[in-house]
Length: 521
Ligand code: MSP
Image (cartoon, rainbow, N blue to C red):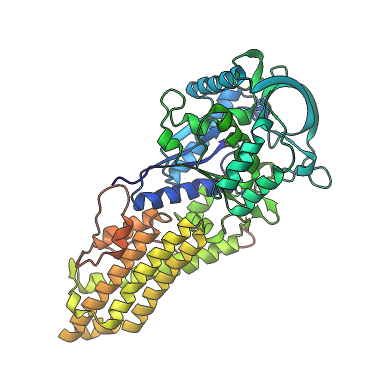
């Protein structure tokens, strides 16, 4: 039976700033989940990209003395390049300035206008430019500020086209209530339902060209451009070939990942737009918390950002992926501190898997260069018990992914590494090697068995951690001589009782111990 295809998306990032750690988290998470699903046999299409229209971009381009498209090209290029350099595996890099997107947005607008779901009216409200949306009074702080941008929204009044979102309020509530996993974790679903207790306002989906030129022109009124959220959300659907070559099965498998800042557009605007377009609902929206610096959200507008490529270069490849997944409890906020990052790298990567692989392979390569064959009959009860740790680690790993508890998965994995370390300490292979060196044949036999058990366990640790540390995992598997077909090691390889390891010539260098920069630096 062929496994089901899955479709995963990140938000399309605004091209008003280069990528920082907050953008990286969602993008890394989708890359990790994609790799995990591929390991379990599911073909996956992953989408990321850039959201390039709107007032914010128009203003920034103007301030930089650039044409908005040239400005968007440059920053979009930074996103694409950053993800490439971080080896993030995306099938689609979507840009909202592409001609095919513009055409499809206009098709959607025409359909909604023709069926009476779009009307022209006057509106007054509080507009937050950072969010590119009107904020209701209830959404502002006690001082009247936008909680995300710490700025007072502008009072605005203008005549615009409105999408009659309120028509779909009841259907949306029913859908959310009948499909508990539509918005996860549950507290975000509850937040959306609480919001929907108030009458839903209609959504202003156009801007007069007198105020904003940088947008997709309305097909039915050339004096207006499309509101950036209405334009951008459609990307997810358009990328599946909608409307003319719609891959509906792929669409219905979609999981959207976002932070809580854009819960409302994804939990309310988007599903009502889909209802109006008569397209099946997305499968699920998975919402995470913020990466904070101190008490504030990390964001370009607050100027407190960490750049992913800079930290990767300084602290070692893949260390950021591991840290972000290990540190954040999905759905809640986390603070980024260099202290925690350095501690995590040293504990789990340098001293953990790095040290384990190095101590085992050094002995194995010295004593059994070439091939190490493991005779099943020589396994003791202790060896068999040690090998059982693989199955429990793998099942806890999978369970963590299924329940959006990625921290639990990573913990199960580091517990496996610790268990192998303990096994090594108890079996003292260095002492067996010494005895073997004096011609003790029993010690040589026992050393071979102990090494074989360690290599099976290391194979399991490498296969399991593949989604989070893909390059380190492949380096380890290569040294063990473990080959596989396809893009990723199948997760079943973690439990393989391999009889023969054709060892490579060198111990792979995985992770270095790191230090906090000195206060002067
Ligand atoms: N362009 C819209 C999204 C349109 S999707 C059709 C947008 N862009 S954004 O550049 O502001 O990106 C917001 C997203 O970036 C968040 O939802 C999250 O995925 C990520 N993050 C940006 N800063 C973040 C943190 N400080 N913490 C966690 N995630 C953050 O909104």
